[in-house]
Amino acid sequence: MPPPIAKKKSVPPSDRINLRAPLPSVQELHAQGKAMRERVPREQHGQWKPEANREDILKLIEQGNVGRQQHLVPLRMERMAASPFAFLRGAAGIMGYDLFKTPNIGCNVVLAGDAHLNNFGIYGSAERELLFDINDFDETVVGPWEWDLKRLTASVNVAGRENGLNARERATAVMQAVMGYQDNMQRMESMGTLDIWYLHATPGRSNVLRKVPVKAAAIINKACAKALQSDNVTLLGKIAGKDADGHWKFHEDPPILTFVSPAIKKKLITALERYAFTLPRERRHMLSKYRVMDVAHRVVGVGSVGTRAYLVLLMGKTDNDPLFLQIKEAIAPALGPYLPQRHAEFTHNGQRVVVGQHALQASSDVMLGWTDIDGRPYYVRQMKNLKASIPVEFLTGDSFNFYGYACGALLARAHARISEPGIIAGYCGRSNILRNSLAEWAEAYGNQTELDHARLVAAMKKGQLG
Picture: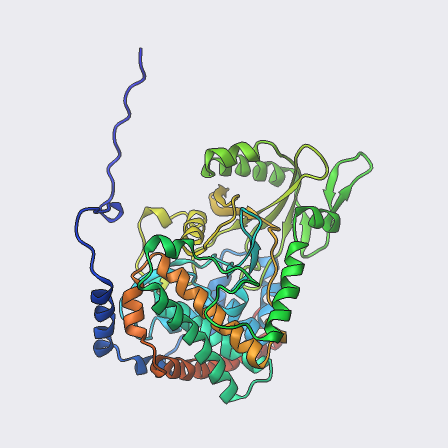
């Protein structure tokens, strides 16, 4: 007797597509965006100062610590207190509170949510090509495109301060980042949708919108060489070894890398087995060729400190076939309280991160998926995938300006993948108006970041936090 035919699931209206109705032209979309300047003049984006009743940042920080592993909260505070830029990295929630008060044109995109300079970097594609792209998606959510661009420009300003740039040089660097966004959005508004999805930024190739300065090229080449050495095999030799019985084990390095109990190890392996069903069938088969050797807890990042993150060592047929998977807790996005709640696809925060990464990145990790442990959502990815970062702290002059420009251009491409680039391009235009405005915004927010950082440091000295 044949199996019963499954009933068709109803598709929510928001997920339905219409392949029949005519599409608006590029010119119509551009004009629509340009008309929005009347409602939200571009000069308004530079007009920012904290409101008199602005929430105490210590309270916002404490709210961000809720649900984290409390024994690691002091380490998070210590890392945030290291410098104003480190504070900015860990203060996505505070910036979300401030961004909520700023103007936007009502054109939503898939946001990176934490698009500061250090969240762009080099990694390997499935074809083992080195790519440069956004590489952190913990805060991804749907919201105004202006929020990502403002976070990027604020990070350019604050990083510029720490690199010794004066106010004029900081303004130039921010304007370059905005120009990168403008230039690439203008280019893509007339491109085919599929062509936009095929766009990649490959370090060392002439596929960027401007010539790479000589000093920047040298720094990029050095980072690429480092990335090529950052794979599963090299990581194995650094953080693991065989015990007396010939079993692979991690080298404990507290508080960064610590052992877990047998009970937690069992839960993690079970979670990985569930995660496998979020992978395409062929990648699930690939995963089935590996076996778990060891599991450890690993502290990562600045904003992520205190979340539950585990590193799993798996081994294939031989000792030369290791695979490191990171199982990282996906907490509620920092911008979430300031945006409308999305539909069911984003109620699991691990799935939200995965969907956001696929939407924004030109080529995503082949092992990307999600799972849950004890009711907490997690996402899973490779730990070492030819990854390397550009040392922003060593960039000055043309190199710093170029890096900001490149990040702005990549952010535009990410936004254009699931949005109407013509609308955003029409609003942004090609002139200096938006650049000058966001340079003013970034300088004002840079000042505020230094004040907020000082407030945190003073509170820690008094024992009020961490």
